Length: 408
Ligand code: C6P
Image (tube, rainbow, N blue to C red; front, side, top):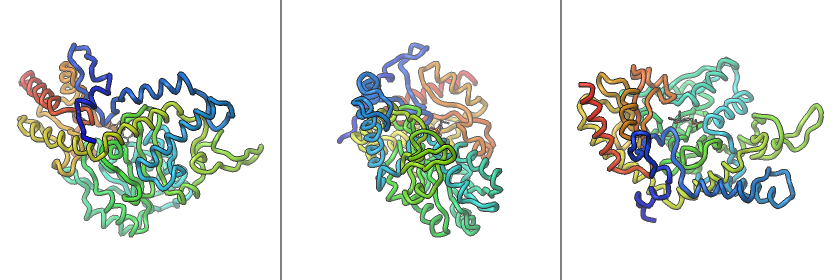
């Protein structure tokens, strides 16, 4: 299919609204959460109007339809990431919960005091804090692959750290601050040859370019629906079936059991073993629809569109005096532009852009250690997705030039 950004934009009702300033919204905050196409909104609406019921429990028509919709969504997601089987796709609340699941279920039962977990300096708090908590509980060691001034991982140092035989290497596929796309496939191969398992934080990769678990050859992959045109409240942990099967449950309750006695229980089969309680059924339906939407666009087209926007944005940012953009050159970067303007606080920048209808995020973007690495308390961040255009980038640059004027 040929990719037409005009046609894509027409699918997103929110993009035609004006914001407080009376200006048409320019949404440049998809790294935080993406907007939703009408097909996703309608699928969830249809589900609640016609098929709402609890799943895996009833024999009535609605319960069967709801179960089929939920399990159908799992299959769509499994095929989207090239999973071997939908048993490997665990629905969680989000990337954060997926990583906590691995830390608690795999980490607690497999790691011993003194074991090493290797992370990177560019991690989101979601891929730091669960390991800090586990390390404190089990007396584990944490080490970090350093990030260069240009926002790339120091792979020579990675090799040296692998000599310490980590049990797990957990890293982000794409940084939510620098935009850096890490060489995940090579890093995973190196981790495996050092005897470590791997967890890839795919929160920013799965929505933006083709990610195939067979090709990556990772052991775990975590991502969130809301960053890929789907609803909030649902995410995925993909894991190798053998690993998931050997892991104890994470949460206990309904649906994750086969049998319960007063003093014991038998866990359910995969994937249900890790899905305790009534899950987010309508959200799964919306998620399935979001995946279908992205498949219709084609993930290669999605990636090419964002590469074009990123290159263009970097060119235009270079025209602005006194602006520093973090992260590597366009070839190694996804559609995330974090920047600082000399003498102007990132929050002021974001607030002034909002007056022009431009939505960007300001702060540490849940990556405080990375900001510490660059000795910056905060950055402003513009990020792109399928519905953004070069014209919107022009308006951003114009607005930033006005911000500069205001402060000079
Ligand atoms: N980053 C951002 O504005 P959740 O919140 O669980 O859906 O995703 C967490 C997460 C994990 N890893 C990476 C690389 C991420 O970017 C995020 C979410 C958003 O940058 C919200 S803080």
